[in-house]
Image (cartoon, rainbow, N blue to C red):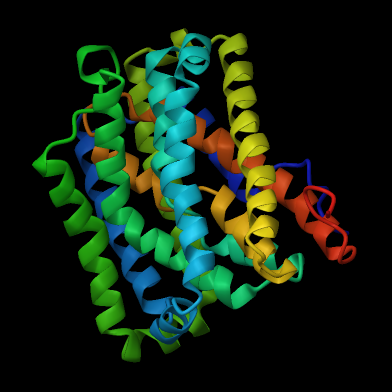
Length: 334
């Protein structure tokens, strides 16, 4: 029997268990350095495996559909950040400056790969375009996300307040050394590593999820030790959920309207809606560990964890509507 769309997926359940473990048994003392070393190695391995399994041929073929990708990238790296900044007068008072920066971090992140492709396939959309668009978004995000986050933090004057984002050359070195270089190495060695990765998909998936859980455990352990949970009343969590819902409620219908106004086919529209509205947890959590080193990482990734689960539930419902027939979708045709 299929899991109902409103239930959390297995990864979310594991994330909740990891947060509970970090709250009850946070890592402290010398264990912090050991955990940080393990997390860095795991993140490097994760991006090496991503480079190994991403087909260069699929990327180059998909890039020919430049209008579709331009709309997806505009939604991912322009529309989301603009919304995050324009809505600041309402969002920041709801959740406070630190969680608001976590919301801005969501807005700066690239699209997610696996679920974008899965939902596009379920909805009978252009899977090849979704694969290329989401994958290229992740590659570009290694450079664009830190730059966008620095620009937005400067725009809102975050460097003068609590929870400031302090991006330095060391942050960019971390992105290059821990994310980009392993990914390039995976691409360079793909001829030898890709067959092994294809034959061990379950192991690779476990490695992906294990890396996220490891980083989340370290981030929320630090939050527990620093007493940051005292600043998270239930009303704040409810406001955070409402903010994530608001972002999806704006972006998904808008992409549907734009896709139809620009004359894209229904299959392309599906790929645009799913790739342009989703944000990656797999790349986002490791990236946060590097960008926000020494800061309240646990609180800064909490909005992303909420957004991740919400986007899965919403996209599952939308994908089923698309799959029911040519008139399905977020908005009525015409």
